[in-house]
Amino acid sequence: MLMVENDSFYEKYELFGCIQCGKCTGGCPVSLNSPLNIRRLMQEALVLDDLESIYQRDDLWACTACKTCTIRCPRELRPSDLIIGMRTALIEEGHIPKTVIEALESAYKYGNPWGAVKNKRSEWAQGLDLKVLSEECHAEHLYFVCCTAAYDTRVQNVARSMVTCFRQVGLDFAILGNDETCCGSEIRRMGEEGLFEMLMEQNAESFKALNVRSIVTTSPHCYNAMKNDYAQDGLVVRHYTQVIAEAIEKHNPFSKEMKRVITYHDPCFLGKQNGVFDEPREILKSIPGVTFIDFDRSREKSLCCEGGGGRMWVEASDQGPRSAEIRIRDAVEMGAEILATACPFCLLTLEDAVKTTGNEEKLKILDIAEILVEAL
Ligand code: SF4
Ligand code: SF4
Image (cartoon, rainbow, N blue to C red; front, side, top):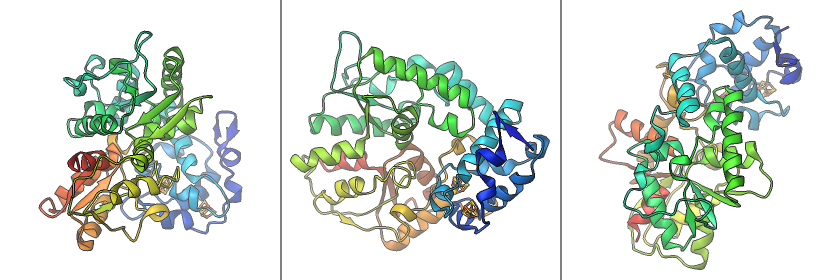
């Protein structure tokens, strides 16, 4: 029987409890476009007796860590954790895609998975005159920017829009500047538990040293990691949509009319995994002139964009339509002019899909923070 840490897969993931009902595979966003069949994997894992048998399994890298399988399982099993456990076993033996190795090495060396140098992390904020937390400089909230928002030239606009939004609602915030380090969310989901723990400890120490009590994040992935994986005592972690929704209830500065039809894509790490469904919708509906329409597959049933779980660093298989492309076609069919989201990975995967489906003229992909800036 294959052992993982001190337990067998059989015990750790309660494989014996699986009744092979298939609800997990039925909800899996990659079951139709990749070889991954999570129901079958639960069964096959029962008879694994050596690591050799999982070395050749490329299907493990198709998982987006959306957790739909775990949420849907009637036996309360954790099929998504089984995949991460298997990835951990592969990483320990060095059987991982080259692109994943590069992302992990970059996170270790530079504190981000994008291969970008550390002393350029805050270049996105040039000219914005932001406070940087230090022993001398304090603020009520830490704005945790995220590696993708800090370095990706498209997502940097989201970070800059966020600053405008925070200033409009009067939030007292500061950033960590070049000292910000990857939250480790995707590192953990790629299976590199040791590196995740190192990044978590680095962040936790710097929050403690700077007396950080409240964190506001751009990304649902940083939000989820710091809220659920770190679980640091006395630390309040919120996604920016929660903070903005609360602020505009008292005073809404985003009052310029926008006669646009907008729909919203729920990021899995914000919606399904943390129940933040209402706040993004409340923000969009509060903009005068906006007609808000929801997808049929929204909220708990929302379709994953396939950008999470390390998939930004894994070649996708071409077996079938990408979920993000299905999302784009559904949005265009509904008559949406803007597809809003609130996650850097969703933004990038949806924007790529709007191009590959040839819908750039019909549909714009924007983060909610960017839409709010247009409403000023
Ligand atoms: S939903 Fe749960 S019980 Fe059903 S096949 Fe999947 S893992 Fe097994
Ligand atoms: S976490 Fe999501 S992508 Fe991964 S197996 Fe489960 S449903 Fe499929």
